[in-house]
Length: 200
Image 1 (cartoon, rainbow, N blue to C red):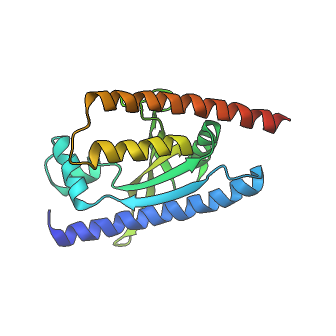
Image 2: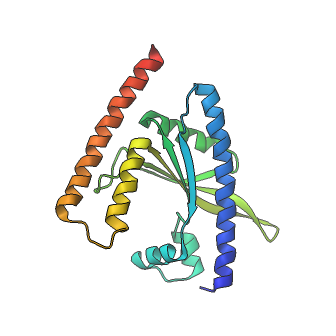
């Protein structure tokens, strides 16, 4: 991978990320006005580091070239949306489907079917058009939507499982999965309270 070409490609992903981020910030403000509370609590963004991209390609046994990178690594540009309760996640997801210049190409619902680790969240892969050499090119951006409780678990699980030099023990791995299930129950109970207040 040529460094100059790689940097150019990262600039394109950054443009796509900013474009989707700015659009969703407008959605965030509009939803707050419509519903009277922040259905979207926070939106954060990031572009994967070169090392992270290469490691993921190696893990998935892809040849290290730009074609494989663009075709197979869908989360190079990523956005994370946090919502107060589960119901809000699906409201936001429905709205994303309706936004012009954002085309939904893949959905992974880890709320209905959590990962074995216990991870829950709603992932949407979208494409947004970016101008490259007078042409409009669709660029992928991954949007992860979680409740604040899901995000708390996922952030800490990632730190202890992947960011530490020490391998996580089997016992602690089971504990994390159990805690994810507990958080899921709490999420459901909080949503019940929200629903009662909305109908009151």
